[in-house]
Image 1 (cartoon, rainbow over the protein chains, first blue to last red):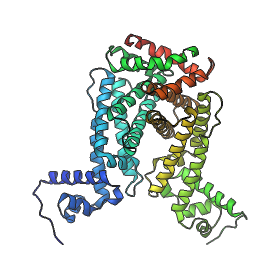
Image 2 (spheres, rainbow over the protein chains, first blue to last red):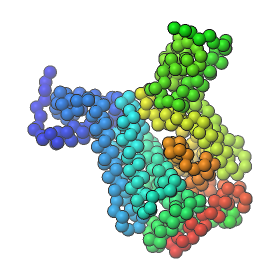
Image 3 (cartoon, each protein chain N blue to C red):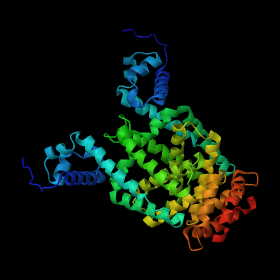
Image 4 (cartoon, each protein chain N blue to C red):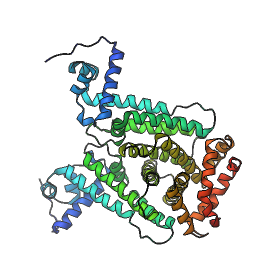
Length: 237
Length: 237
């Protein structure tokens, strides 16, 4: 057995090197196909060293890697409360889509679950990302607590973003990334309008968003493109 | 050890009795907490009898129960191609929501995955339900094959229905079931309008749906409720 010579790193540096190595491997392969040996060899260290940092073995390493990816994902939705709503959301969604494109297979494995190392703890990490993303988006929409209809609308939209990302990666990115981002953003605004049709709190969100935007904004662009689509339904009014 | 006396059933009846017993148990408890003994005792038969029908043990029983729930779920979306689009979708969605309410925790376990007996095979069953549901809905929207934008819109909507169902069950059904159904249906129509704003095929779907409905229909009702929500955005046009 050869033990590769390795660079001297601080404990923190080594830990973060092992985590990013693991993330890279989990990004290429389903968790069940990644072994601690693979992580050690890819990081250029010995297997016992990996165990020293992650005594719980692969399960602990996987959860730590997932936790670190989850932290990065949550940061995507961290956006200052300034400027038109749709611009803020476009920036957050743009960061999210860049992240998932970078992590590709790892993101798919992460969100799909269903792997041999999946447990209620790993599902809890993924759920926490969804909850955080919803809370951050809601903080841009309302000051007061969101009622069940508005909250449901934002949370189901987050699921549809997740699903769209998985489909997009699975099927060879049929749409350009920026177009998918804009489509998903348009769908959130459309969902808010639909919910606003039966919920005053959500209607107020749409009203405030529209007031804050001008004719050169994203909402104006969407509104102009929607008019010809809904005009044939004018006889229904 | 007592072996309960059991009724004489045909092979097919026995198999289906064991499956529905298993589904009922998986509906109450996460799969890892259900044992073959539980299934045997709940069905009033011996453990060896359960093994005779499912020699692969719990994993095989779980997959068969999942398969049978999946078949039922797929049937929810089976709807004749007649009458206004929104009525057809409301019936399909109504059956789906009745199904998930009936199976409650089992539905949650099924869709959440992340259990000890979850494998790529069980994920494939759940994915197949999603694909079938999307195909059935698309068959009501277009005759020709759906392009990537329309297809993405329907598939992400299915994910948001799934997510809404899980949230609804998790959080004690804050909205009445019929209201959630109508909200989700409105959101599909809104999503189609938003996608139609950048995709001619989807715009044609909206046009045809609107043409087939009268002023007493669901789409007219939605259109009238949407007008006051979007009126404050009129300055954007």
